[in-house]
Length: 296
Image (cartoon, rainbow, N blue to C red; front, top):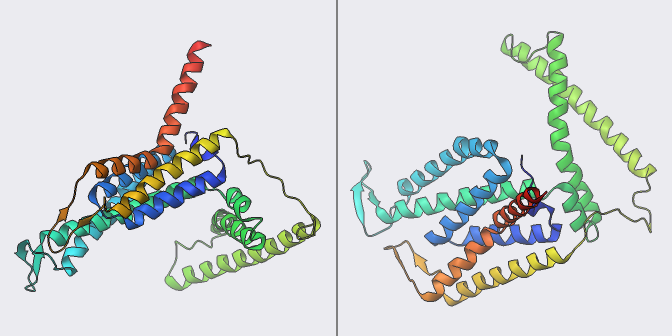
């Protein structure tokens, strides 16, 4: 996995950025907005995830896109442009197909942005942002995020150990496999309860919850973060202003229609500038790094 420079920004900048792009991706249905957001989200996913992200997109995201696009015209028969009639007698319209494609692209885009969010916003960043406002909830959330990968790793260890003594859940009849699965689950629950007790004792021994106790943090808001904050707010303000002015006005029913003005192009450029921020930051960092290496 490559180094993500954007992930090194202040957690507030990361959270603000993903709040903006995910929020816009969930509400804008204009085809240009959908295309721009999908392109930026997939590009960022591939950049930080590499081949694994490409395989995930082809294996899961592409089928979701196709299935969602096909389901809408099967149940939604609105639209003035009738292409054919389904076996049940309902019309198949061009508008319902286009709206289904738009809905599918929106779903895939939001999932892709959340995938990037999960990679960038680690548990320590969330605890840092929420620790002062809601410390108990942030601690529980962080422990829950940490528990899931530990649970998966531990259950793999237990399953391997049980397999070595002939208690494999993949062999034998259904009753035997169910018995072995229940045994593994019982061991797993016992481990989880013991781990919870040890965690509670450790937190108590470290003085968690005592008044006046401070928390260590490595995050500092510097000049680079200030520039990113101004950039994100400026792009987001331009996008919101375009929405208020009607630059994103587009409809799918009863006929496909939209408006194009000079302001529309400017707002689309601002939307692309916002979505492409992480890739631009990483590309600039790569260029600077290669330039410095060539001079040495």
